[in-house]
Amino acid sequence: MSNVKVAVIFYSMGGTNYQLSKWAEEGAAEAGAEVRVLKVQELAPQSVIENNEGWKATVESTKDIPVATSEDLEWADAIIFSVPTRFGNMASQMKQFLDTQGGLWASGKTVNKVVSAMTSAQNPHGGQEATLLSLYTSMMHWGAIIVTPGYTDPVLFGAGGNPYGTSVTVGQDGQMVEDVQAAVKYQAKRTVQVAEWVTQGNQ
Ligand SMILES: Cc1cc2nc3c(=O)[nH]c(=O)nc-3n(C[C@H](O)[C@H](O)[C@H](O)COP(=O)(O)O)c2cc1C
Image (cartoon, rainbow, N blue to C red; front, side):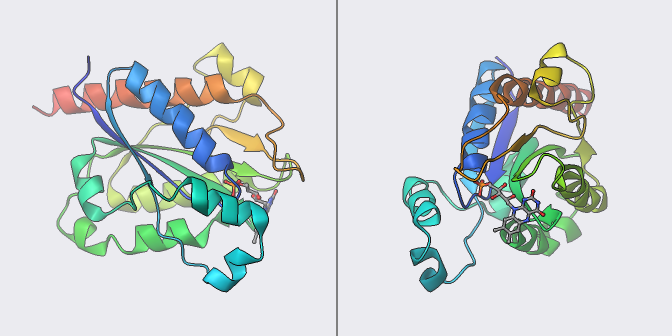
C-alpha cells in the first residue's frame, strides 16, 4: 500500500479521455494509491452540446464526477491529466483549469507535484506530442516533476510507443484504434512509483 494520493483530471467530449482516466484510476489504485477521478469544468454553451449526440452522452455519463478544484491539486501528490488534442493543443477547458490555478501557483503549492499526461486525436499524427508538450510546458512553470513513460516498458510499443505519454487514435466512429489500456495502467503505476520516491525523499 502506497501513501500516494493521485488526482486523475480529464476533459472529454466523446468519452475517450474519460475512459483513459478510468484505466489510469485502475492502474494507480493497483499500485496502492488513493485516487480521485475529476473532470474539468465544461465551458461550451449548452446549445452547442445539445446538438451533438456523442457530447451529450459524455456529459450525461460523467455527470456524477466532481469538477476538479485547487483543493484537489493541493491534496494530490501526483496528477495524471487526460485531454483531447484540439488543433495540436490541449482542449481549452483544460487550459482554463490550469489558468485558474494562479493562486495555488503563487503560494508555491504546485511545486514538486509529480505529473504525467495522456491524450487522444483523430489522426495518427494529429498533434498528440504537441498537445502533451503544451501541457508539460505549463507544468514546468508550476515546478512540477514530469514523469513520461519513455520507452521504459515493452507494453508501450503495443500502444503506439509514444514516449511523451500514452496517446490513442480515435476513429470517426468514436472508437479507439490502438489498444492502450495496458500502457495507460503502466503509465499510472510509474507515476505512482515516482511520486512515492519524491514524497518519501521529502519527509
Ligand atoms: C475543435 C476540434 C479540434 C480538433 N483538432 C484535432 C487535431 O488537431 N488533430 C486530430 O487528430 N484530431 C483533432 N480533433 C479530434 C479530437 O482530438 C478527438 O475527437 C478527441 O481526441 C476525442 O477525445 P474525447 O473522446 O475524449 O473527446 C479535434 C476535435 C475538435 C472538436
